[in-house]
Each structure stands twice: as structure tokens, then as C-alpha cells.
Length: 336
Image 1 (tube, one colour):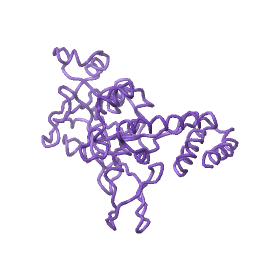
Image 2: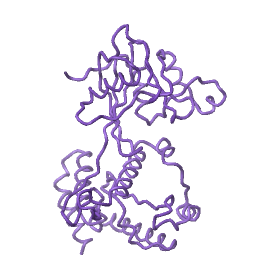
Image 3: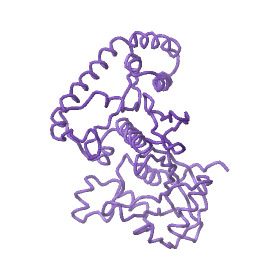
Image 4: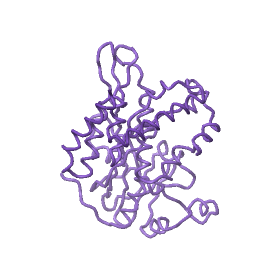
């Protein structure tokens, strides 16, 4: 019955969306999927996809059974996206790194063999995948971690329950609804017109420099956060501020990286580095930064000492921010 209802539901919404853009036809079904039971979501893309998705689910259940796991674990999965063909994409934490998890008995090597792949560090994977897959992985990490750390109601102390898609948790005792939250972080490339300011923290890989970054405080606007962070960490006063772009980042928790360019007041470029926050900070010319951006195989050159510093990987918004400064000396200012 559920599969039949799902197919009927798909047909209804297909006619509603058929004249809209590809983005709309992808986004609206994805939004609807968050509130539907799993069988309907699996059936949403039509009869052919139903068979494919249901077959995949059955294969996954058999795989989990092989490792002594109950298929009930599938209920912990979360919806992370929807393809252009309106296929629902889910993510599931196998718990391979948690000694307290009920899934800790899953053996890593055996799972790799069964899946015909290999596990790698998440931070590395994010920079090796294409943009779309990296975004899905980022969403999965952030959403699964949020559910793992928000299993109790902050008011009643009672366990909360995840909805089917994983878009929220509800306290059964008082019906309070909890939604995943994103912490805003500003990441700013400071320039004096001809040079940009790059910094490094002790936690960075050896030799890597990046742009200044900091969390927004309660009650602050983005502009206020940018000005405060720059003043606190390097002792500079912002003259002009320009918005660039944004990026979701799952570490340490779910954050929204808001990238900006800032120009400091003329003649006020002397750095007063806050060593409690930063390990180093320095001005670099456009030619210096452009040279590093052009270099390939940075890791090998870094080890040989041929590269004085290196920059975040291409998929990181800090890299895009620095590249934008090199290629576009001027940017449009934020509205007053």
C-alpha cells in the first residue's frame, strides 16, 4: 500500500512541477520527502526507481545481517538530498569508530571488502571528491553528528525521537521540536590594496596559511563580527568590507562559512598578532600568492622546502577567497 501511495503522490506532483526549472523540480520534491514515510520516499521517483531503491535497501539489510546487525539501524539514516531524477539519498552512520555504539562489532576490513571500497578520513575525502559529492558528505556528517549529540530534550530531559527523514527531533513528553542549527562563521581575507594578510593557527598543517576566521557572537551582525575579529586577532581596523560567498562546513560542528574581503585603513597596516589565537600572521604580495596558487603537487614541494607556504585545498572557501583576490582586485561592496 505504501509503495502504491508513493507512486500516486509522485504523479500528482510531477504535473505540478513539469513547467518549472530543473532546480525547482529537484528542490520541491526533496522538501516534500522530508515529511513522508520512507516507503513513499523510496517510491517517489516512479515504478522503475522503486524497484531499484527497494532492491538497494534489501541488499543493505542483507549486508548488515551478515555482520550481525538488525535492519532496525536503517531507521537511524537521514535524508541528505535528492537527485535530478528525484531519487532520495540517505546517509547512515555505521559506527565503526565508536566503542559505545551498538554497531561497534562491524569490522572495518570486512566492511571494506563487502562494499568493495576503503574508508578514508573525512577531512581528506571532502577535498578529493567533486563539489556535489563533497556537499552531500558534508551534509551527512553534520546531520548525523547533530542527531548523535541531541538525543535528549533540554527542558524535560526525556529522550527525543528523530523523524523519518532526520530533519528534526521531537520530545514526546511536551512536543517540543528541535531542528538542526548552523553556527555562522566569518572568514575574511584582509588586504591593504596591494597585499593580503594570511595567518596560521597551531592546528593547521605545517606551512599552511589561510584567511582570518571567527564565530559570530550573539547579537552581532556579520559586519560587526568581521571588524571585531580583525581587531582582536591582528590589531587592524577595517575601512571597507565586501561579501564574497558562503560554504557549509561540518567541522567542528555544522557551520556556515561566510566569506568576505576587507580593506584596512590606509597607513594602518602594522600587525599586533594575538598569539593566544594565532601562531603567525604576515602580509603577502599578489605575485607571491599567485605563484603559490599556480604551483602543483604542493605536498611534495612543501616537504622538499621549495614552497615557503601553501594554501587551503581548492574546495575550501578560503582558497576561493584568496584566488578571487588575486584575479579580481576590486569587489562590489556590501549595501550600507
